[in-house]
Image (cartoon, rainbow, N blue to C red; front, side, top):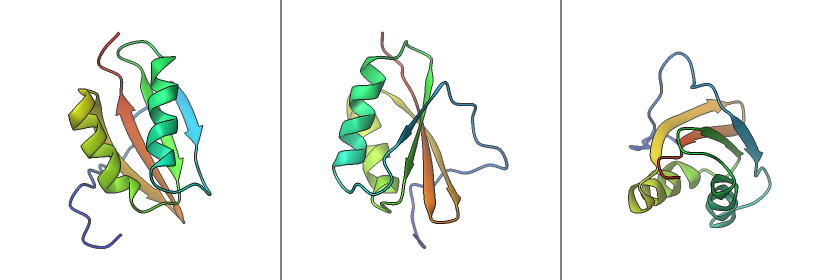
Length: 90
């Protein structure tokens, strides 16, 4: 994870409306699962995706850019990477 250019982190992660645990799955599964979960959510809600796949730090911002959702950043807690996405479309 060192040298990751996509990590956006402040002292406090955003409040999540939903949490998706994708630990133990690897690219592209975390992004696919997040896409499915976001379809169930309302615009403006925030999804936290918990992963242990370092690729999510590059994959999720790229996916958000392509789909118009807002990538809010990544926070590392131990071996887990928590990424936050705000759904922007209804």
